[in-house]
Length: 148
Image (cartoon, rainbow, N blue to C red; front, side, top):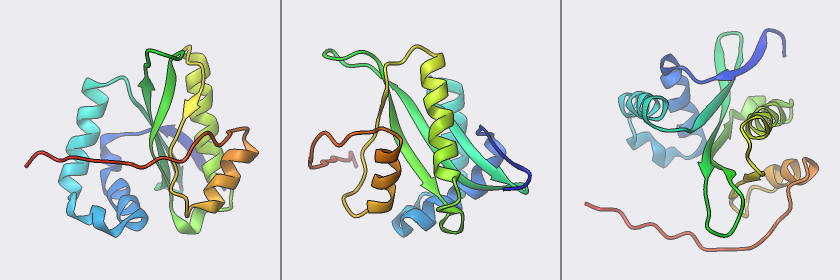
């Protein structure tokens, strides 16, 4: 992990973020590099979200995207909207470094905890979460309606 750092995202990171998204799910390829760039700009300029990237030797090898999460039945939390680590960076502490940075940010900004969803097939990720003190709370179905 020489010359590695976890830092806030920059707009210039968009090509690496695009590639990470594609590696995570090839269907995301339809969301072009230019759209990823514009999305980063929008998030940075118009939301309270935070995105941290893991950078090693000038390459982004992972990111975690957290968003303030207000509920009518709970204290404020950070909702993880995206968490991707490049395959060749897995099992090297990259995911732990990213989630630790988000946890620190959440604590420092007065949030009560972190909430995240994870696909049932991602058992290695589940082990990471459980090792860090996250607890499984429920199975649920995810529904989406898009407006054409």
